[in-house]
Length: 231
Picture 1 (cartoon, one colour):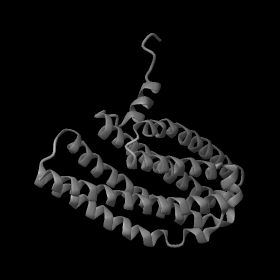
Picture 2 (cartoon, helix red, strand yellow):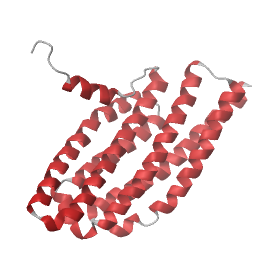
Picture 3 (cartoon, helix red, strand yellow):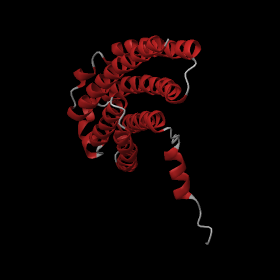
Picture 4 (cartoon, helix red, strand yellow):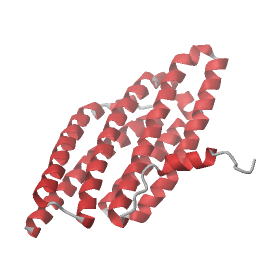
């Protein structure tokens, strides 16, 4: 029974790694397109999302099957739960890559704006976070996962700066309203990509250290914005 369980878990992890590899490739291509202005790099990103969706369904079914057949507990149960959550995060990252590709195509003639708003740097940071989050899962590296969670603030700062810059551009140059609007949407997609990378890192920490730290980012923001009780 234990050998059967171990084989099923190994198969599950291998499928998650394969799925993560496809998503990583999708994100790498769209972020490189964003950084270089080479729209042709976006080709094939949407087609690969079909593979991601297929893995999503397969992995979900595997998790449900393992839970039903083996009724795992402790670390084994945490792994299955984290696998289900990471599967969901990866599927969303694939969707976001497709959405970023669409915006890259729509803003191809406005590459200087992307550089001025530092959206290329924001994308590079989010892509780095996803790569690190995936590696933290592959190698069960909770320290690397902690690094990913800390890096999320960098993307948030880029997002705020880009928003201010683009709004200012729209006010001063109305002819740029359309491309700037597309770029604002793009920054939201990139921010979400970083959020999903953070979630993957949190799921890994849950498995390895039995710590529940989901929604940490939201709680930290609430704490920062809480009124001073002495005032």
